[in-house]
Length: 306
View (cartoon, rainbow, N blue to C red):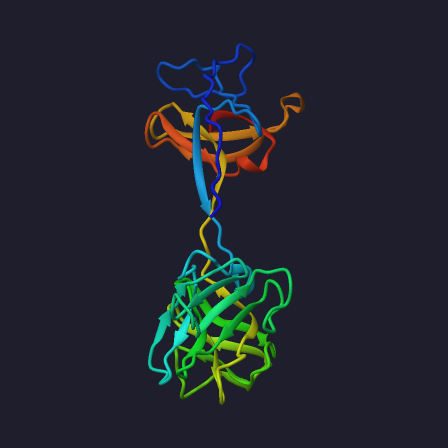
């Protein structure tokens, strides 16, 4: 979320000009030859009143989640990601426990050998067990368990998620590979043998899950299966705050009298443009010129409407 910081600014008092007047208020206890001039520029504002208005801007955001770049050695869950395993009956997903060494960052079923099933990253400088440096790999377990990475849709998601990636051959064992929605093994989104590329568009709501799983076909041995996965989803517009500085004009006069507010961007031209007619409802009355941010500077005067 973007936070906008501004420097505080104090209004500068304005004194009536001493030159010829261009109009009059014709009000009690006011000089008839008086008009107010206010200068505003982008860096410094001399205002009768200063108002800060916050405008909320709406955008559509595309959130991108990448398994490899998001992978954490310290947190599980890690934002939208969880690193764990399925039991052999496909009835429950369980988060893995940390079991890392100098060569591997590992989230596994057990903290001691045999670790599998697990989700791990090769932190070494060379290929190991079919996994290249920096690659994330899934490995099944000896009792039919499946290594699994789970992603959970954030609360502000809208529409479909674009799920792309691939399972790579990895080590010498032949494995089954899967992509699931909400742990539904009866309606598998995508599956393959040992490796394959997936490119899916999946409707999702907040809290829905996507699982990437690797299981053994005949033996879990030599089952390291690298995976690359990226999920892109649109999320609800996020509010942001912009600061606008508006000229606030405090008009004093006779209640019920109509005054014409005029403005100029250059006093030397002696050219004034009508801004608004105001029948004074209170005395004084605050009028905010919401068009003032569009001008580098602006001068104002008020006169009885004739």
